[in-house]
Image 1 (cartoon, rainbow, N blue to C red):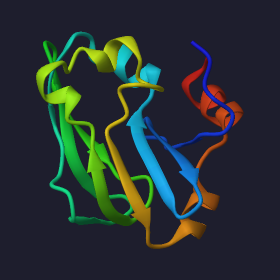
Image 2 (cartoon, rainbow, N blue to C red; image 1 turned 30 degrees about the vertical axis):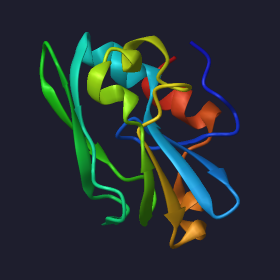
Image 3 (cartoon, helix red, strand yellow; image 1 turned 30 degrees about the horizontal axis):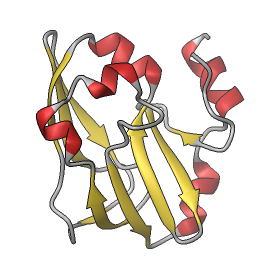
Image 4 (cartoon, rainbow, N blue to C red; image 1 turned 45 degrees about the horizontal axis):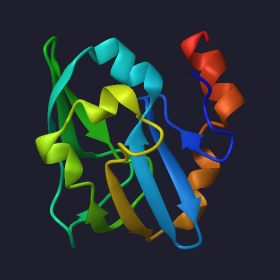
Length: 126
């Protein structure tokens, strides 16, 4: 799996794609691979403010439940409702159709602290 160069990554295995003042957040291919078959995704409500480094949801697989950590701070504008009925999409397309949330960034400079694709791949030993 290749990791998109235009995404930023966390050591907790989340990614963010920044477009203007908005960010789209998901989990990495490495994360979904480690989790195995994903059976449930718990996401925040629209309008909630999330803070960088805090949990905003969870992903449940047949192996475990894992918290999802916010790579950046902001207000949730949209959630990927398709994951409620088809959480397995996270296994198939974690960097595309299976994004988790979209938010309005409250501190865009936080992205400067995140990993590049190359740094993330070194971190996971890819």
